[in-house]
Amino acid sequence: MTIINRYESCRVLGVKESASEKVIKKAYRRLALKWHPDKNPGNPDAEMRFKEIQQAYDYLTNDDIPLNQNTEYQDSNEFYSAMQDHPFQSLREMVVKYYEARGWFNIKPGKS
Image 1 (cartoon, helix red, strand yellow):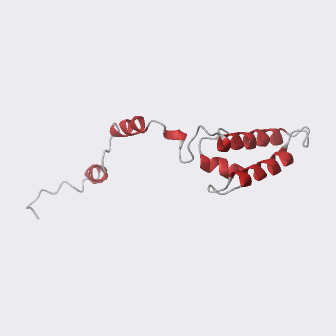
Image 2 (cartoon, helix red, strand yellow):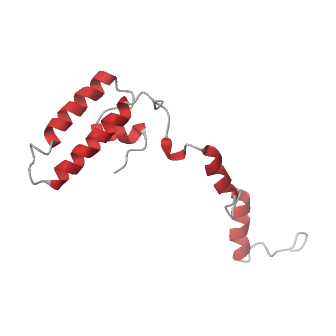
Image 3 (cartoon, rainbow, N blue to C red):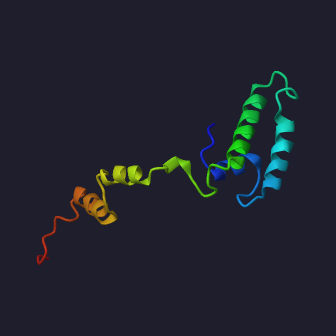
């Protein structure tokens, strides 16, 4: 698993997003001790869990990443430009196409 944001990192360590560095460090040490591969020989799940815990701790203690940054969508222009190419650019357009496909908008205005 690749940690991509603060929410996932906090979930892995079992702390709140508003947790202090001291709480994060304590949770990391507790989980690292529990899941360390030397304490769980022959358990591949423990090794994977340990790496996930270490990655989450590294993410949360990295001073280069702002606390509110979600690295999943670093370039919001790229995300929005991809959405502009979507066939339904607005909710109204989507609803109209939905009902037109079912023949519900074939009624001409002014006719009963």
